[in-house]
Length: 406
Image (cartoon, rainbow, N blue to C red; front, side, top):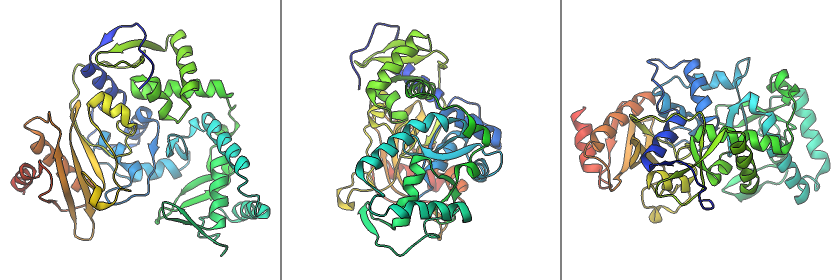
């Protein structure tokens, strides 16, 4: 994953897993009824909630909160992203994501990179008046969706099936460069674009923007807190920073005493421990993780920490899929012990378990624990029943457990 490891204390792989999971919030005591205080604590752990449009189960940004907080009112996230004072804003971080508003200045380097990319590609030059027309419409009428601005101009269909109008392209360009911000999403999950000064708190927009090296160092430091223990590749991936720049930041953070070089037994990669990382002796987690959860989104890290090779198969033709369309890893204790292909049949009120697979070292209690978690998730989603299809090596045992729970 990274260059050869420097000298430093040695920790076991099990210790590294526990440190990593604690940093992500899996050692936090549960709140019987999650509140905005619980939400704030959870977001301090992950720092980003990746957004994805797939809704076959539940949209990606809701899932990391559920995995850590348990069943919660999804209105907490809605209030955090829309109510004043706004706690959370949509931006480009790892990918499109929700993040604390105070991190907005640090992500100026991502907005600058988008501006350079657009300038180099010549996007917008073909229709130089359109960007200004769109800006004026948003200023006068915002917040607006692309549908509100649909101008009837020719559309593109060359990116995963998206069918973007010229107005949509202009809105996306201005959002990614920071000329516009996202005020929220409508019921159809369409972005509502507005002027930054009408979306972000004045003190956030007035905050000084750090120069690139300082921003990179701050982002790498935040990634290190969210990882607990990590390689340079892990730290670079969290906010999609180049590994060379991340490595420089890591050296500076080591010199400042914020990161400590360590050796993880069995790893050859240079690895670093955050000075504030908790080192629990035990993690008692039981959670289904979204494919876009920070614990697993960087697949080399998931494989190194959990010996869990994970690939999302949404874009894989059905006949070529190994595990299914929308497969969630199952975290039990400090191990990923299985994977489950899930679909919410909202009309029928059923949580459909389309495939269930155990990892080679899954403990005997895996099916029983998974059944408990699936019933809990079904309740959170407002579904009445869990239905298990006979696909996967864990499916028979899971079906028995589900039936025993009625």
